[in-house]
Length: 152
Image 1: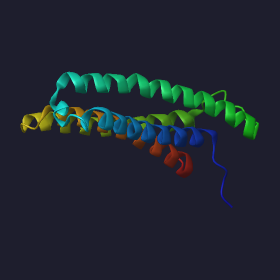
Image 2: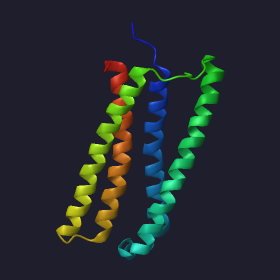
Image 3: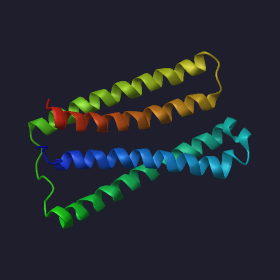
C-alpha cells in the first residue's frame, strides 16, 4: 500500500507545476506579443532586460498567491493544518535540495559566461541565466519530492 502524499510533497509538486507553467506561459506571451512581430528585438539588450525583470516579480507574486490558495484549499479538502514546525529531516531535505539547486545554477552561470567567451549573441547569455534559474528551482522541487519519498 502506498503512503499518502505528505504536506511538504504536495507543496513541492505545486511549486514545480507553477514554475513550469509560469515559464511556459510567460515565454509564449513574450514570443507572441514581441518576438513573432519583430524577431530582431531579441538582439535588443534593453528589451531582454525588461522582459526578465518583469518575469522575476511576476513569478514571485504567482508563487505566493498559489501557496496561499494551496493552504486554504488543502485545509478545506483534507482538514489538515500546515505543519507548525520543521523538524531536522525537513531542514536536511531543504539543505540538500538547495545544494542541488545551487549547482544547477552555477553550471548555467558558467554556460552563460562561456557563451560570451565564445562570441555568441548576448541573448544566449540571458536565456542561459533564465533557463538555469528556472531549471534550478524545478530540480530543487524534484529533489525535495525524491528525498521525502526515499528518505535522507
